[in-house]
Image (cartoon, rainbow, N blue to C red):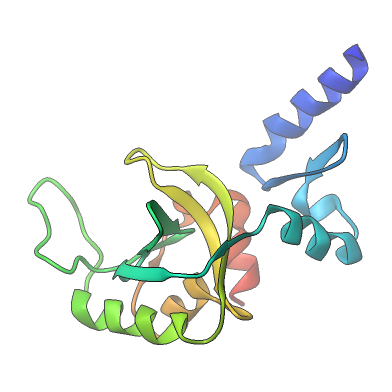
Length: 158
């Protein structure tokens, strides 16, 4: 039992480099699972969002839950607070872009963490479209390395 706890602690210590996925009692960084198991591990952690509401270019609501897209920052819909450095661009255009992407199919998300505002930070998909990648490819958000846990978005959006 102690060796299992020690190896789990080692996996968690490495989780800054990779999201941790657990299948049964085995927890490993995401990239250490065989590819055939990664999809099923993701499916187990995936949460369906039948009524996604787009708040702005990097946030949506799923019922009462606020979901922040992993690894990106979009322009503010309103004006940028003076105490913050905000992403450049048109916040309304960024929001419209995310609304278009959400219509690509059923919305599902895989929670990664929570941010300081209590939002769930997640990899979000509409059908097969990764919404963070969509916003980056359509130049409606900027990539934030320090917000991309395990550089998952960097790898997936290539």
